[in-house]
Image (cartoon, rainbow, N blue to C red; front, side, top):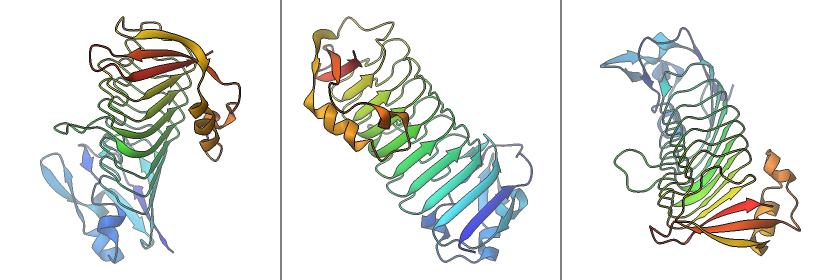
Length: 271
């Protein structure tokens, strides 16, 4: 068996740091060594086999079954490999990752994909606040990679984001793309109040006009933008409703800002 499977015995009483379970740390370890890995839980350490039933051998893929929202830092800093989670997970999923693939058939907590540099995350449920934002203490958020979310996301999506792409099929909370430096965010549903707060550069693509837009964004009118044709075509291979957008005749209303902070960011609303 070339896949390592972890099945949660019972929900833990405290939050558990699962960052040791990534291709970076598991390569070359025997099942006995995996079972003996110590995981931080609250102010103590617990053995992996006290929390999980462990089967299989790790080659390049890890599966976690029966997960819960107290399991944090899954895929933290991963550089390669694939992790599939059946269930909800906690905070910092894929934080700082630079390669590989993370798939979650459930919901994720705050700081999903925070400060990530590459790789791909696909969340089939909802995510918490600060998706693709900066890890606390870091100056920059997401720097590369792709995040797909089939559900909704919380506040501060893409806060301090520098590069990369985030596609949200549901709704986004308040302050979407706040302090964004570069990169692309697309939201299929609604966004909350004050998107683009302190935005410097980057692109926020929306299908609905925000209910509350900052007065520091200038309305530049509506017209077609050629780069959107190429962008939409690049989504054709994705398992996302964004792949169904037309790649011709695509017109948007363009708002430039935040003029209180450099003012070269853009909010594009499909018309």
